[in-house]
Image (cartoon, rainbow, N blue to C red; front, side):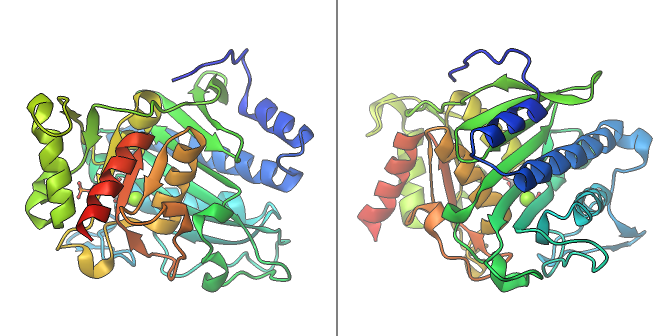
Length: 344
Ligand code: AHM
Ligand code: MG
């Protein structure tokens, strides 16, 4: 990863400099600051763990509350969603919000002014790791609201990832980090807990083009499509196989943590199509998981694909649409895509 000097640059200073350079406007700057502040609040809740009474399932004992995806919600999923909604409703920079935890998009309450941006988020990604003290994170994506629309409805969010004006995630791990792009490189900020500010720690993250590390849930192997079987089979066959090198494997089961590792030292992350998730189109969600991660990874010199199409060119058909995901080091993503093309 390249790392030019960061000279104690706070997130606020970075955003002001981007605004002065004409790459973002005041509303987008405010939006990012508000999201970052909400993420600090989520970080505090995550950090308290069992002491904060925030672990475990949402809902009443024995009756778990479910989201639109039919997944049991954790208390921290619900809390993080509320924190992001509350923080973003009143600022005047948004025309609407959408979240993994809400069936439909969320209008801005009538008492507040509207802005030109649409915010989508997965408030707490990696929920299965909450109760076992493993890194989780928040993922977000920002789109422009179509001209003339002040009250965004679901259809206004259905724009391909190439239309994103900003994407980012925070990872709540040993340290809390915010990784951000506004289309001018991908930059990492670490939360200084004493001061309460995100400070730039890497300017211009850069993913090595080649890798010897892959991330996939191997327990799904028997359910994969033939090209994926062959691709991973060749990775596993090591130096003697067609890929000619020994690959290492990592799987945190928090996309944020796995993608953060890839942005830091390279690798490929995949959640491919399998016969269990095929009826839904995949496991991961396009609009608030795959697209923002793809924007961040492309801005760091990597690539992102469904295996058959550049991720950010997929035309969304639903807010909670799912897609197969291949993301990371450019040449390795291209290799995975080749296996699919050779099979199709
Ligand atoms: P979530 O948004 O409900 O937390 O689900 C998404 C997560 C990703 O973070 C992770 O890559 C994947 O699901 C793990 O899935 P699995 O448990 O099937 O390995
Ligand atoms: Mg998620």
